[in-house]
Length: 198
Image (cartoon, rainbow, N blue to C red; front, side, top):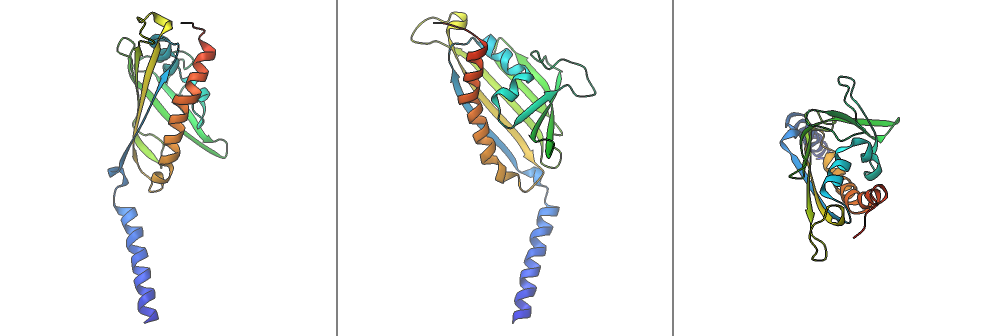
């Protein structure tokens, strides 16, 4: 009886291990959405702030630093143009140096659309990563929109496919990180950078 029970447990463990090893985890995609209203800033200023990678570590706790990838020479301290690249380092460097190379695939200032894509993502963890910003200027207190005297609503959508079965455990922390960035750190950073009045 004990032998058969041990065999059953061992068999179940082997099946679970084989399932994780054989079933392609890239079948599981995730989408995280966050939004916020940023006061006293124009659509142009907010778009350019988010399109400039050196600003990212100021507003994202998990973002350690950014740099230009070795295969290109575009600047990362100015708003990226379509086709530009940036390597974002996060995690706990040097103990756990994770990074992702983003390509700016869309930067439409008039429509307030900004999109980054990484096919390889974070090797061993996730791929097919997308970061999409929708930035829209809105009226405030019933006044007409007058450049920097208005607010902006910004929506962030992040998508990725997991390549590691542990990724679902990290999703709640990523969601908290994104919401903290948009609702707390982004308004603080932009208020320091841009002096505006209503």
